[in-house]
Length: 146
Image (cartoon, rainbow, N blue to C red):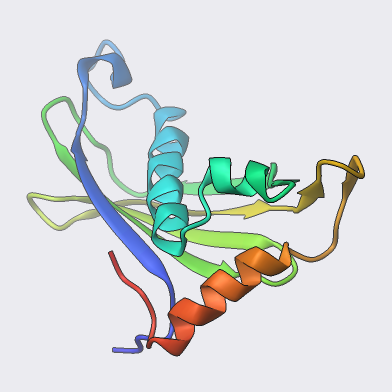
C-alpha cells in the first residue's frame, strides 16, 4: 500500500435528523458527511478552519461531486475517509463513505477549494505557503493517516 498521501478517517452514527420519512439518509446530508471527513483531514494536517483564518486565508468550496452507490439508514454507522489529492494550486479531496458494519462503499465523491486571501480580498491560484509546508512535512514522514 502506498503511504505517500495524507488522509483521515472517522466513524459516526446516522442520526434521526439526517434521515427522510423512509429512514434513509437524505441525499444532501452526504455532503455534510464529506465535511466531517474534510475537517478530520484538515485537523490531521494541522490547518483547520481557524488556523486558515489566523493565517489570513479562507478556502471556499468551488466544486463538489457525489456518486451515490448505496444508502445509509437510521442506525447505520458511517466510516468516512478523506484523502488529499491536491494541495499546491487548490485543495482537492477525495471522499469515500462506507457502512462501518458491513464494509460496503455507499458514496464517493470529491471537493475542490480555492485559496482566498482575506486581507487582499482576492482569490489566489496557489495555496498558502503555511498549508503547503504542513502537508509536505507530513509527506516527508511517509504520509499521514488518522
